[in-house]
Image (cartoon, rainbow, N blue to C red; front, side, top):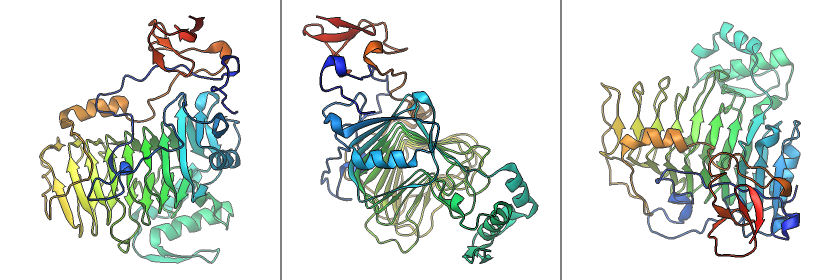
Length: 451
């Protein structure tokens, strides 16, 4: 459905929603590495996405804005077409989840905003059944090697790792699917893309399983993107990986977790796919993110890039190392909060430099504070470090898809639900709060008035 809120009031389909009472730490605009084009100097990059990253959408040609609602069926083709043909793609979750049969691959696109309203969630279809899980357990897969001892699958594919080989072999034998199409159970792959904004969306995968499958989202050679206020659950291989000379990206106010669907390989965020990654890339900001239930490793694990870990929150008590600097990486770690029960907070291997600030908080007794080494790591943008003591409250309250809720579309039901619905505040037909001195058509207490 095309939005036409820039023509006449009678033809408008718009939503009136109050601005969220966000934490004072949430800038609600791009910041960090996504706004830069240098890792060392303040060379700016004007990240705009499709021209707007809030809802209602303002200042964008109506012909370039599309709103999607769920059909209850596979929407891979519809979503792919919408992204390629429009600048702003609004996912309205009021009609249910968006079903995606397999990974949506996007290449060489730029200037797009993907935004969720009304709890929009994109979900994969395949997941490992209990029958499959029982067979994997019976074969002893959880105790197998993840670094060697593989073999050749019935479809002729060679696999180098014992656990992955046996997992894939058993699934082929049980399902008869020699094509292994299920391994494409992810949502988005962005390759050689730039200036993309993804906000306020939920992503539900099939559960983590060691088959070398798809991530919920992957960036490959993709630059100057902002992923904000999103929720990632149960990615098959990873929740959100950034690799292959991707650069200048920011991940803010996002949550990462796994449910009981996940079997093994709960490795949530990989930055840099191998030690051979070309140096000078993969510069990434993680700010006010939450790694929670059943995350076991890679929060993140990174190579090569300069990684800024700012005011993130860790409650992942079941896992291995949280922050994992690897070959040639540089980490600036400050204002993060590691809750009680989080024991394996850090491990590094061949990193170039790590700056561990005194502003980090580790609650669990007996966990040693990591040491800084190498040249002090700095980033080329301005920011403030929130007190780590405030991180649990603000992140638990505001991280994830907490924006743009309870929005109703339609000229006969222009209204807000909940907060600010009966305050007497005045809004114009673009959903912007205004004073009472103007004349025209406005919304007050969810009703149209003429002044």
